[in-house]
Image 1 (cartoon, rainbow, N blue to C red):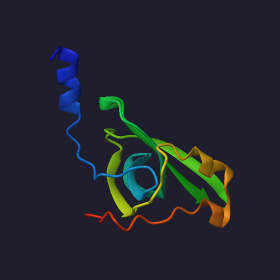
Image 2: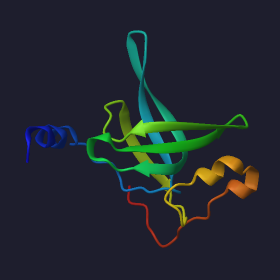
Image 3: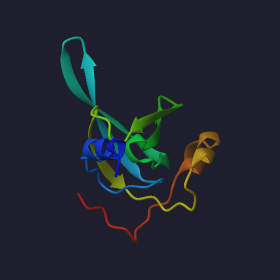
Image 4: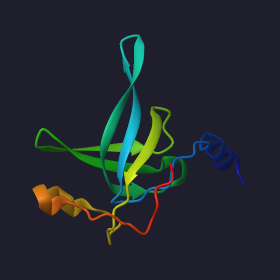
Length: 119
């Protein structure tokens, strides 16, 4: 293992719960405002995941005041405080970009009852 790979392994010490596209998650993000820091919850549906070692990321989409908002989180970023899985979604795609074009009840994802949520 070369020096770069060893460094990346040491930075990937964070363990997040197992989640996949279609799952509803709450991402607690550390937000710095002036000289104080607080934790802000961002709740939505995971629509994409990119697993690339230290550069892994996932995209969460939510509807805020009738407008779709997407945010990309770096999996191993220090600004992520925690990730909590609210419900498992049963989907057949790895990337759920088609949800961008759907509105209301059409954008719902049915729940996957075969997987249990471990806290």
